[in-house]
Amino acid sequence: MTKKKLYLIGDPVDHSLSPLLHSAMIAQTGVRYTYEPRRVQPRELADFVAEAKAGGCVGFNITMPHRETILPLLDELSPAAAACGAVNTVCIRDGRAIGYNTDGPGFVNSLRARGLEPEGMTALLLGTGGAGDAICDALVKAGVKKIFVTNRSVYPAKDLAARYPDKAQFIYFGTFPVRHAMAESDLFINATSLGMAGMKEFSDLGFLRDAPSGVTVYDLVYEPRKTLLMKEAEKRGLPTISGIDLLIYQAVLAFKLFTGKDVDVPALLQALEGQLDCD
Image (cartoon, rainbow, N blue to C red; front, side, top):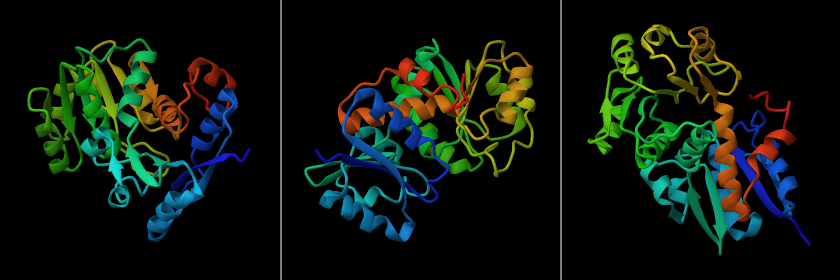
């Protein structure tokens, strides 16, 4: 029986851990699928989607820079993908390309896996790109009490906060506004590229001084595994979560969309022990 093809597309893709994760999930569940990285440059995106719809594969994940530019090429969007305006998973069904975003529910699942229930929390979200947008949507649906929204670019943060006037509050991205919001928060989320290998670092982490004891610092960056933000938070005795957690839990949801199969996450982590360098 021919194996069904799954891909990760982006430019670049060689650095991604998604093939490692999906290959392990394929091995665990025994499904007859393959999962391969495939570099697709922006000018090649439309041709790739047409190829996929014609039978070239049954689905694919998407990384930068295609998560938003692919939207006009798709036949349908899930409500979560439509709300945040970004897609990370596409399933091909009956020749139609259907886009999903698993970042938001994957984030909530990753919190619950660590015993953190979003309902009733106050969160501080830095970053309003595709992942930050999806996470905000998911946290509101999960029942957060309040979410402060900030970003280096003001207008996207204002727009996202305005989507949930009863739950979200825009604050300017500056040391003092962030410090004041942090003092009220149970969860801080870095959904920007700050601290990522090869990218700019935080110019000031002074806002951590006002973090309440026990506030969880969740950095979506996973390269390096332990960012400067996480190191500084740990120095102050604050619990931290790496972006590896989101990577795993969003991948599990994407795999379910592709194959219909549930994954035993503890067994997956055991199978990948030492390969992800995560706690």
